[in-house]
Image (cartoon, rainbow, N blue to C red; front, side):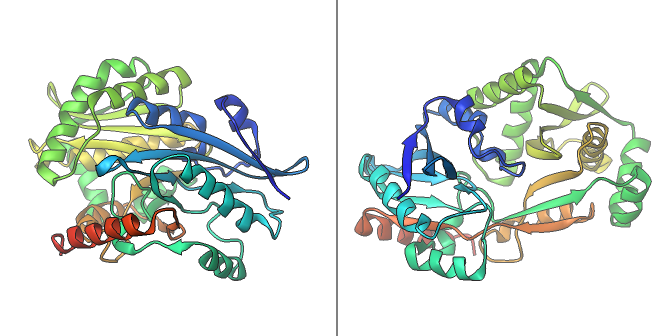
Length: 347
């Protein structure tokens, strides 16, 4: 029988089931970022005797009528020697957690995605495979990321990218765009960063977190020395700002934006190229551009952004489907129906 305990200390949680490939969304610092937004974060550890089996960080999100849903982003993290009883025990654990709150469901996208096809089948038998229309939310991790192998020379990277992207990087330089990599004093950049994010959000029609969230992320990144800000400027005007997280051997583009002003100078291309070069300097092997459309209807409006990222070269990474433990079926199906209705407006 598996035992499950709640872990209240973030450092202790991070030390459990140590794998080199644990996603940063299952690290305690990511949970601390969520707390800034008023979200409740809990951490659990499952073991069989003294042998670690799984660990997961679970985040609560409020929805109308006083309900919430719980999400385990890119988790749970499981051991390679997962016992046959894991899924049944995991399901019981999630149901108990859901019943302690007013959660309609608990959602997860298992990491590693699947052990085998047989395991995938068992997963679908034990949990509800989430409807694709319910994937769409800034709170959920994207199903597809675009990543670039940067363990090559700069010359090889430039040669491998689309010729138009390579041209635009050079064009930005010729048109007077300069870049800066900011590694200290990150919190001092929050006003400029947020101003650019606001302009980007208004232009592209997406919502932002409150400014205090970005302030907190910058402060935490400053303490940990695990991130940098890449900016592109023309004259005295900052046109682009990107925050890039260094985690293991991967540089993750977390968030960023650009001004409409001087877009013909191609500052976005040069800012990403500067980020890639800085990531290489820090011995990273992968540059993760973040979410892309994957060619399906779920993220269809991401296609222009996807096209931009793909032209740097690289490959797509696909994560597991979302799986839900449904705690309150009637309300859950109402939630999915609402998501389905909203999706019709994006067609």
